[in-house]
Length: 94
Image (tube, rainbow, N blue to C red; front, side):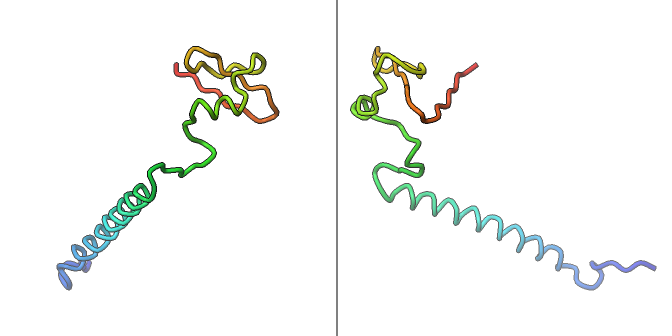
């Protein structure tokens, strides 16, 4: 009574699966190529310009060595503190 697709076109499900899987793999390959291309654009990757590692002169210019404010951490034996209107996010490993 029941009809099966396999009796009429035995290779159709296999081809459809291959096409679907190849699109996923192609997407991953394109993403990796794009990431590698983006990483080689400049020496310093600044994907997030406001969130990056800083240098000691930048810390001094920001006034983070002042004796007042929220304690942030320590850099080269000196305490880092922030005393301003900006938000500060703290993270501590458990």
